Structures are given as structure tokens and as C-alpha cells.
Length: 480
Picture 1 (cartoon, rainbow, N blue to C red):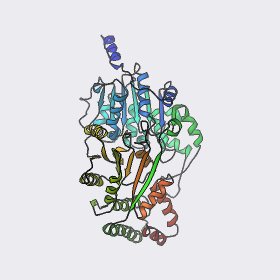
Picture 2: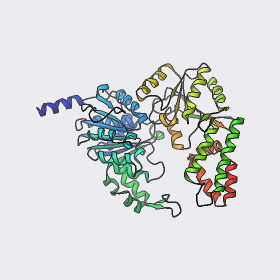
Picture 3: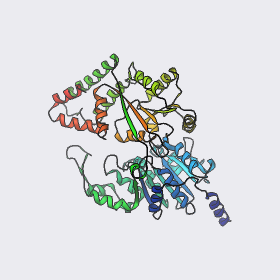
Picture 4: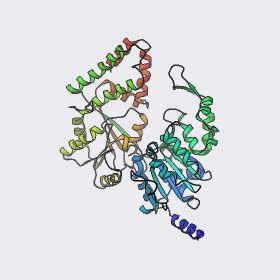
């Protein structure tokens, strides 16, 4: 009886791929297939998901299931990719949601798609997925920088569960976002044998030098090449430039001025910070960390027409309407940084006679794929937040992209750009960035031009200025 059940399981798991691999994907599979663990460090748009699916296909007689962790915003995209590239149907895939608990998880699926953020919350999702792990499990962590923090609850939980799995795989186009320290937890998830350390503290003692002034700040990495050589056999890395011939990118900047209301709010925000800076002489450092980040975020939100969470009059929306009216492409993507702007933009575009839909965290998970499919079929403007849409989505239907606002992080901006500039894009892609003429946006623009994170660059500038005293720092802030 047991043998019959095993045979039935094998037959059920026999599915085929319906799309072909590109040469670099074949190279990746060839390198990683002999090992039980590995990393696909493939730049955005080079087909990481298809490569991961192929590894699962070739191992399907050795495994009973694949558990695919990914950002919540990517769950429907992962389901779409599985159906697109294989003969698997809906009844082969189970996506975890808010209703999932231990007694409702089906045990007869091959693919289980799990939002990785849920591993940080309570125990419902954790125990629901933990029961699926055994030696015949393959686990994938998509956008594996989500587990780069060795101290994070989700990192510990995902790593602990996955120790039972026969095969483990990480996917990311940006394995290092803040320094080589990011690699420790990702490699620890795959196997502690790769780096040879069973604790972060052992790794840190050998490879990290910390600041004596700012607690927790890493000032230098030691033996970097040794780390690279240790992980080399277990990862496949490729960039778009190395493996794809893609059309050009064209970047265009458009500017507007602050309205009177914005100008007043902008100056008041700077003055509030300076007043606090001069008020605190008790050791509290207003020029570092959270305080300075809040100032920068507040200034940019004002530049986008948001003051203390309330929309205010601005010229940016008028600039967007003018740019949109000149676009002739049937499909356009608009990236907004703040959710408050999404509905405002959709309503303005609809008032101008355009078809526009919003895509942010307010769209229920199960409706997201249908919304995207409808946009691909019918065209119009897809207005999305970078937080939800900039990872994993295939938006190659559009060759015009409008950034209503750019984010502070260079990596996030490139993620958003590459939703349209990837496999499947055959047209030159135009990126039109909207800017308000003010100090904070000027600093963001300059940082991104140098391929730097704006927040990191601003912090470096402030560290230099504050050495000359509070008066110089006050002048710097007021000049933003």
C-alpha cells in the first residue's frame, strides 16, 4: 500500500517545462545542479525564476515539494511564473494567505508560495509552513536580502526550518546592499559549512572592524577575497550586460517649482529641525540616525505635495499631467514613492481622460494578478508604489516609465527601472523623472547620477559638516 502511494506521488509530480532556457540559464543550472545548495546571484531581468524552476524540474523525482519564500508583494508573480513556464496548474500550487493555519494547509501540492514577511509575525504562519519540511523538500528564498539580517526573527525561523530540507536555493540580483556582511546570513541559510562559521560573532571577529565612536557601524571588511573564494563554488552570478542584448535606456528629467504652501512647509520643516538641534545640549545627537532620516523624508514628502500626511497644493501633479499628455505609448508605468499620491494621480489622470489603475498595498493579494493582466491587455497607466511593485514584476508591456518621485536608495530605483528593461523588452525604454526644484531633490538626483544611495551620501556630507560645529550644520540644513 505504501509503495502504491509513493508511485502515485511520483506520477503527480511529473510536470514539464514549456519554455526554453537561455544560454546563461543553462550555465547556471549546469553549475548548481550537482550541489544541494546554491545561490542565483543574477541581475534583475535575467530570468532567476525560470532558472530556479528548472532546478526543481530536474530534481522532481528526489523531492515531494518546493517551498518558495518571497516578499508578500511577489506571491502572485511567483504563481504566474510557475504557470507560465510549466505544465503545472492551479491545483499544483498553494499560496499562503491570512486564512492559512496548520489544519488548512493541503499536503498534496508541489509548490508552496509563502510571504517571507509573515515569518516575522506571530506563530500561525511559522507552524503552518514548518510542518511541510523534511528531507524531500526543496526550499527557495527569493530576494534573499530579506534574510540578510542574522538577528532578524524571519532569518532565524527560515534558516531553522530549512535545515531539514534536502535542497536550498537563494535568489537575488543584489546579494550585497550594505556591505559584504550581508552575505553571512544568506550563506548560513544555505549551509554553515560554506563560510565555516556557526555564529555571526565568529564571522565578525575574523572579517569586520567596527567603529569605536558609533556602536554597530562597520568601518572595514577584513579578508574580503577569502569570503569571495569560499562562496564562489556555490553561486552563479551574471549581469544583464554579460548575458543579454537589451534595447537602450533613455533618461529624461522634468522640473517644477514649489508652490507657496510647499515653500512655507519646506522652510518650516528645516527650521524645526535646526531649533531642536540647538535646543539639545545634553548629549542627544540630532544630526544622526533616525532624526536626520525623518528630516529628509519630511522634506521629500513636502516636495511631493504631502505635509504631515495631508495632500497640499503643488505643481508636480500638473507637471505629470503635461508629461502624460505627450506620451503616445499604449502602456505606461508610473512609480510613486508615497501611497498618498497613488489615488491622487489616478484621479487626475482619469479626469484628463486617461485609463489609469492604482497598484499598491491596498489592492488585495488575490486581485493583483488580475489587475496586472487587465493592464497588459487593455493598456493605460499603471500607477504603483516602489515598495509593492519594484520587485519581481514583469512590466515589459511598457516602454515609457514615469517616476513621480525617486527613492533614496539607488538599488530600489534600479529595481523599478528593470521591471520594464528585462527579458522580453524589444523597445528602447524612456524613463521620465519628475523633480521639484529644491535642495533635497537636488541631492537625490546627484547621488543617483553617481550610482549612490541618497541617504548614505547625505549622511557623509553631514558627518563632514558637523565636525565644524553646530553653526555650520545649521547653515547646511537651512541651505537644503
